[in-house]
Length: 249
Image (cartoon, rainbow, N blue to C red):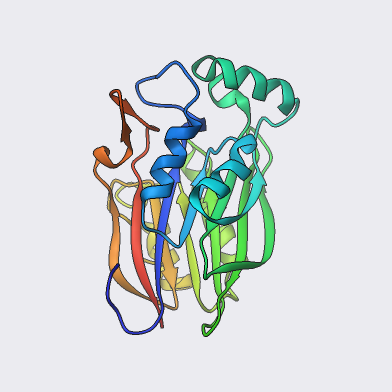
């Protein structure tokens, strides 16, 4: 664990690719995803494209409490889930998605809220939670999966979400934002100057852990692919894990 005076918050964000591997593994991979989350050191995990039916098992396996916001393609979820359990690489994202927030003790979720940012062509929702722990000020966490392949829409959703969270003094704001600082520096500049949210993971990254009112102890960074590889030769998701360490200011 990173040594720092005061309370340290270890954060992780990961797009689970609807529980699939890249390249495809041809079978369900719940146990493998649980193992990666179980062994990584984090206090707060922001998950996107997470199969909703996995929520309770991911929480138990990772030793965490949690909150969930359903996103797109969840009509007829029982049938979709049965197909996904048998043929995950056939149904792909049509199994239904969610944003999930996992929180390990001593942190606990005291309050949750959800904000719908887009309904078409896919529903996009912000999952917000207020976290408490003994001896600490509250920490707000916001988990977002912004629209894909529509950078203007992504920027609008991102700025609207940041405005919605503007009253939170201590905020961890992240997820799969589907926006690269190198391609839209103006939006990330506005996030910083107007909302105090920084730093991005890197100029070409779309997965970010931004903060306000926290000290950055370890900058957001991609973890090497080996950290999400499982035998035999399975690389989970098409997104890297991103981690960062912050201290309560």
